[in-house]
Image (cartoon, rainbow, N blue to C red; front, top):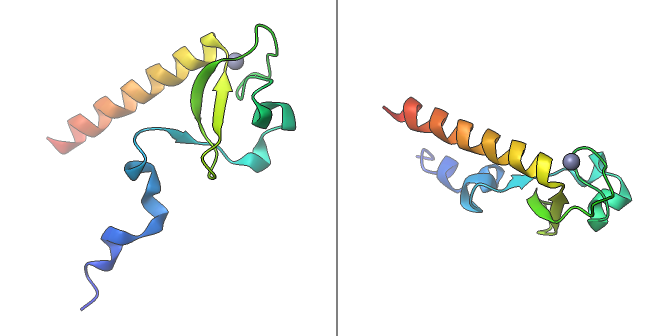
Length: 87
Ligand SMILES: [Zn+2]
């Protein structure tokens, strides 16, 4: 019997590390990875300081206030989706 193996699958780490978005470092510029530019819209000033998520290695990824707000709204919306789906 191998029916339990899916519970431990490392492919579902998002659920395990909270609701943080995990960014693909390959799709970000160096400035975005370094936190010098917003991970979404590339804005460098004002310096992005709202955590949007993280890289697979745990490095925090930052965004401008505007994108952080959109991301938070999106997270809230998908959370509600999950809640409704559960009922
Ligand atoms: Zn932005």
